[in-house]
Length: 168
Image (cartoon, rainbow, N blue to C red; front, side):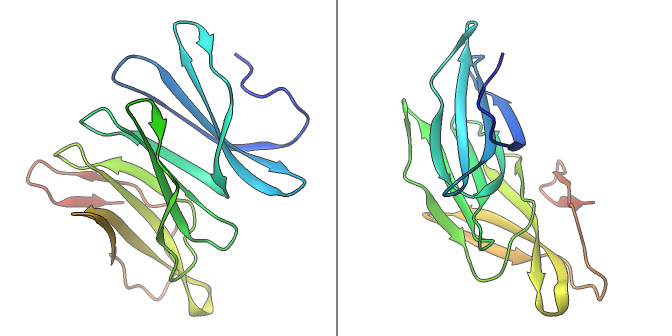
């Protein structure tokens, strides 16, 4: 399937399968007015229309235990954004962190099927520390996980059976 046939650069692709067996495909495209996050849905061999979900780069997505598709991305200033797909509609994009520059977020699920994000965050002197972003009631929270003098890049992690996070 060709998700976007124009000549503009398409970078940072990601895809997830939803609970109905359809595929959500996301990518960043550089356009004359800046980088944008696009999506298309593939189900039953039919590729839906492409849609712009926000301005920015480096998207990552998960499908939560309740079947909601959660998308996260960073904007040109490094702020972290989210939108989710539920009952046929994408939510309005929401900035969930903008205090420092977020780099290369990765979305995961906890043991209850709720999304969280791991990402390096830039500190003064170009040091990068790993942060955990997670929903708490109606708003997103951030916790710094590393405190190293050397920069930390490209985190990954899993939630262990007892709920603790194994950060690698």
